[in-house]
Length: 126
Image (cartoon, rainbow, N blue to C red):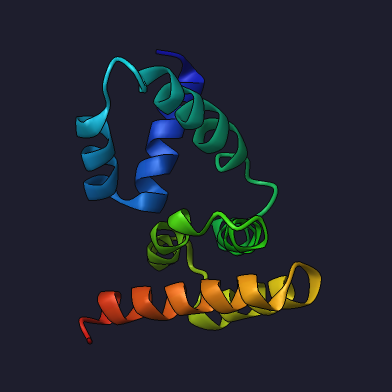
């Protein structure tokens, strides 16, 4: 593996947690291994590893972009990651308010619902 892959795996574990990464690695097959390597090197080893902006800011950007582009499936994972990146619940709401203005109220509304459900799960409340 490359240095970028190793860095990416360290950052991925720091942001998403060992349990999540261990599950993803256990589910990896010969078919999707090239994709997993790509995201580990490019997303985690390049973008997330860069220290120009903080992990908190990266979390907010990522959540806003996921909502704005309608990629809702990854929002709960990235909401859970904020426990490690330092983005607060207020930060997350502000990111989604930006989505409402610049990308559409329905997208922001759905993202907020997903965040609320994820917070309830994290808090252990129904």
